Length: 275
Image 1 (tube, rainbow, N blue to C red):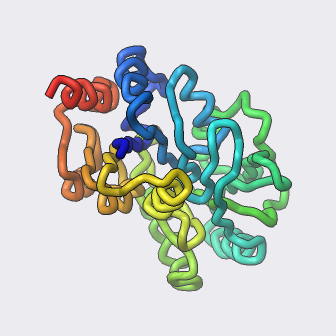
Image 2 (image 1 turned 60 degrees about the horizontal axis):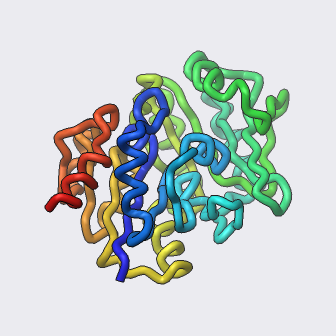
Image 3 (image 1 turned 120 degrees about the horizontal axis):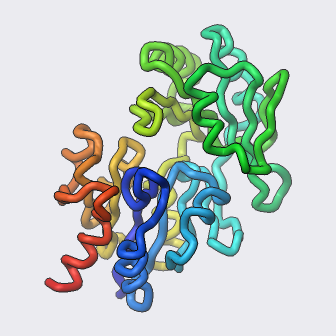
């Protein structure tokens, strides 16, 4: 039975400048003939495909925190949507706190991702949008409303405000939804991601396992943040990079001495290749 390797992207596989070094590409790709390789990320398909040029991925990818499972050639395997009615209610409730979400949604029945955002933005949201300035799937909205197929709603801002929004929305919807509240390393702020209750990396891995037909006993995963904990608990071997959140490291079987900027995943692969 083939071994399986699934890695998070940001602050794990990607360097902080969002690049993948040649060393990491070479080490990762060296596994492709004898292993199942995939990605589990909060990123969209569009961004993931941009970042992974020259990187072998031979199994469906877990995207948007598990709300979308899709292959590199754009075949959709599974989706977990927040309904328009629920998403619009969340938008209206968070507006009471003076903040509006980014909405990642599917437009139509093909893999056509849309990134909706309000014209009313805080400084941190404005900073984040500068990283997407060349993307053609961004859509500014004077009156922000959700679509029929919403993968996730994401709030970014100062910790106190984001925690207040998280508590308020969770008090309304409870376990009907999934909530990820964590620090955001790029902007030194906090983010809240709201998803379908079954949209997470662990559910995504189970979907990929059923589709491909691999045994979880052969699974090794890599990560750094709280949205990786579910797949850490699922995998046979869970590996945290040195720069992982301290609260995440306690769930890892292995904590690497290298950070993402030091090609941590590649050094791990090199180590297992040489015994």
